[in-house]
Image (tube, rainbow, N blue to C red):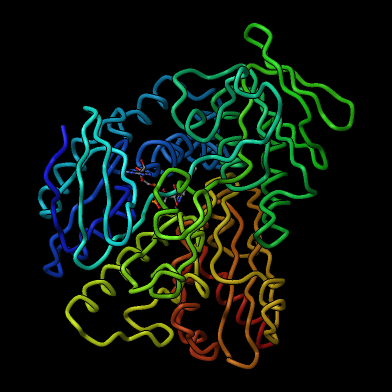
Length: 476
Ligand SMILES: Cc1cc2nc3c(=O)[nH]c(=O)nc-3n(C[C@H](O)[C@H](O)[C@H](O)COP(=O)(O)OP(=O)(O)OC[C@H]3O[C@@H](n4cnc5c(N)ncnc54)[C@H](O)[C@@H]3O)c2cc1C
């Protein structure tokens, strides 16, 4: 059954965290807004990414921390209760039901159309609904694409018959496999290797390159590799998968060094691809299947009249929920200002540009040890032509860190832009550093003069005293 065309000020395609935030902002600004969702309101993040992965990892990290504390280590010596961990994970995904998030959309007055949305010419979106019908939507002001990404898989013959795990299965599996091969060395690979090894799998990580977490400071990947090995996982570098075949319950994995492995499951965590292949991009002159390039106001470049926006993973600026939600807030403000004919503040760090996407993206990797970083690495800063000073410090030398756990190992780096006199990047690696990163984000995004940071006194005895050590080392 086909509905009569409906007109809204703003049509958002994709109700992941980014679409939800963008829709909330435009509706709050007085623009009627509808959101189109083909699966679950809440997106990848709520059901197959951030929430379930962190629910799996929280007990793993808590146990690792407890094992470093005499008086508690004995009590934490045993295995995790994997059934209880998986049950808590299920609760955090609301058992893969989206009623709570649909209620929230209703409470903020955003309309919802369930189905697959496709752009159908300028300002037009056609939705194929689950009952076989069609809903036609027209946007007075803007269409915002917030369709996210899916897991990339390698072009290996017979891969589909192997039923490999992607991030979806790795975050939603109902049982612990006896053995698991993890292909990849990025964040999803190291987090899922950490989780399943601790839950009882024998994990082997296969990395094509020579390091883990290649986009971060090199010591991050080194310390995480040490942590994985100490937890019992095998980590192999410089190796690629050339063949896969399933024989009964076993996956046979062929390697380019001539070796072979067998495991119960294989997880490919080799990257993401944009959810744009069946989005009608060709109807407005864009290439299906590609990332959607945007300017700093989140407007898709190369589109006449500026009615098309893309926010979140799909624009490839920073594939992180918090950064996509920031983009959603900025894009919402941009769409509202343009609709009302108000001027944009699009100077760097202005209200209508996502400057932090290039200058101050924070990220936490929930492994043991944790990694947290913001801004540029030393190499990235140099490549950007900055004149920098790199200051490193051993985190174990801080009183708060040694109190945090015996045998504490960790490292910190700050990258100082010598011409601008402020930090452009900070990385911490060590237990408990995830909660430390926002201090660095404020310093980097705020471009706080390095001399003023000397007056930001960290509490004693916290791990934050690393700031004092880094600043002392900088001042010589
Ligand atoms: C295992 C894993 C762990 C992660 N952990 C973290 C973390 O801890 N912290 C963090 O910040 N980031 C994390 N991320 C990244 C995070 O999941 C993404 O950055 C985030 O989900 C992006 O949000 P989004 O709204 O852009 O896209 P998504 O969350 O992917 O949502 C897109 C939505 O659009 C819908 N959609 C797509 N196409 C259409 C269409 N044509 N019509 C209608 N609907 C459509 C989809 O069904 C989906 O609901 C993790 C990723 C993975 C894979």
